[in-house]
Image (cartoon, rainbow, N blue to C red; front, top):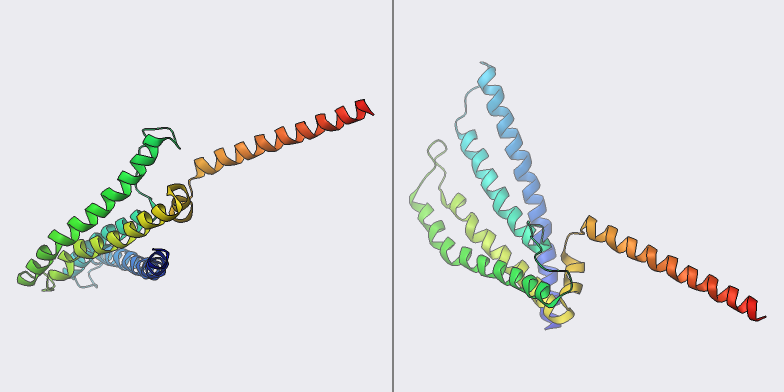
Length: 205
C-alpha cells in the first residue's frame, strides 16, 4: 500500500503542476479575450470577433472545473465544522467529506463520458468548434477528483487523518494562530515551572 501511495503521490504532483500551468494559461486567455471584446465594442478599427465570446465562456468553464479538482486535493472548498476538532464525530465527518468527493468524481466520469460524446454531434455557433472539447470538462474534472481523493483517503488510512491533512491541506491561518498561542502558553508555563524549581532549590540550599 505504501508503494501505491508513493506512486500515486508522484503522479498527482505532476498532474498538479500541469493543472496550475493550464489554469494560469486559461486565466490569461480569458482576460485577454474579455479585454479584446471591450475594446472591439469601443474602437471601430478593431473587427468584431464573435468567437471570442464563446472562447472566453469555454475558458471560464474549464477554469471552474479544473480549479474544483485542485480544491479537492487541498481541501480548499467551503467547510462548515459542526463538531469540535479532534472528536470522533469530527473524524467521521472528515472521512465522509473525502469519500463524498470520491463519489462525486466517479459520478462525473460515469455520466460525463456520455455527455462528452454527445458533443461530437454539436458545434459552437460562432467558431464551429466541436463541443466535445467543452463537454469533456466534466469527465476530465472527475478523473482528477478521483485521483486526488484516492491519495487523500489512502494517506489517511496509512498515516491517519491528521497527518494527511497536515501534508495536503492548505494551511489554515486561524488554526496556525491557535497553535502558536498554545505553544506560547506552554513555553510560558515551562519557563515559570523552571523558575519555581530554581527558587525552590535556592531555598533548600
